[in-house]
Length: 427
Image 1: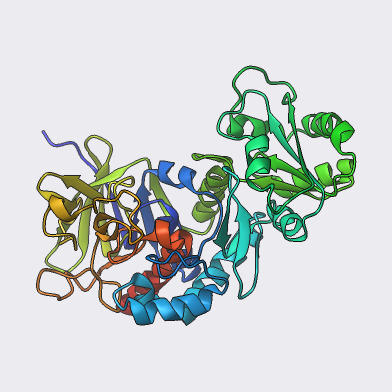
Image 2 (image 1 turned 90 degrees about the horizontal axis):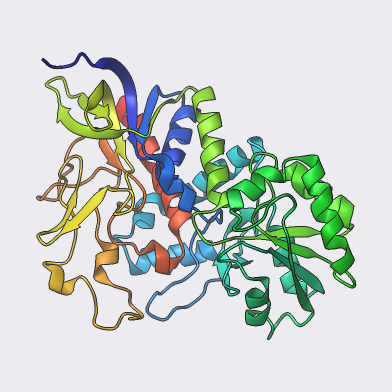
């Protein structure tokens, strides 16, 4: 006998809880849409915290961009099927501004370089262009740009982060860079970034870390730590460490998954329900049908259906292979919920170039959904699959966000565009 399912009705279902899904839910809530969000939230734990808009174009030349908005305009001319061509420069600016304003309201402020990319330090000791960074990282970018004497700190038992490696890689341009390895207060053996970050939200732990660090300051005009300076209280943690050390303090991202992603995750988990979004986290859409009245019927649950949702519209932001929005097998790449056509190479032979580091990137990385100017996925005849189904984020075709350094910007801009299109449909 079929189990009775909980029944929900709404204006909009957002499928996915990566950056695009979270941003879409945020923008929908801002427009007072009755929204439900479905998805597994582990994917956003892999966010670096950096907001990349566009850092490289063209990919084939590896040209690093100083001015991202000018770069997007050129990208749209060169690649008219890129998702940024659907969003446009003006709408992308609005989307990023709205997202950054939300993060500041939530106590996780970002700093951007206005019309220029910033040069962010990575955990392997190279730099990358990015549009905005968490407020906890900006002092490092300033110290690097001015080549100030600086102390980098890492911790015994922390894997994947070496202050010495970072200093070695940056030695050619940052001469007065020293390193020290400390024991993290109260922890021994292998230590993990989340536990360290939560510990630093305790005042006594902050004071002890500052006391351990102070003897090594010498001429340092700034101190860099791995990204563990709290999760929900980064402003207080940063302020107290800077006060105790009497110099600017900053973070450097760690290897993923990381505290930077956890901060985003907990911010959204805390704020979206308060804004009216009904969240069905750690659940999947198991089946989707379109009803005779045009609404979508989605069966949501874990291994078996638990909830039946009737919605006037859907935004698909389920990601690529990690988010399980796309699935690849010997027959090709398929979309996993609506069985939408996927733009992809004709067969597996053409997925990859022979050279692993081919400067053009690999064709499989640009596989995904084709959309029209209203962010509606297209069917096999280049027509909208449905007038009330929209798509956003990395599941979209004709982009290589990793090489183009545009992951967060693309997710946020297309989420904004999809929500705007959905709002027009709902009237």
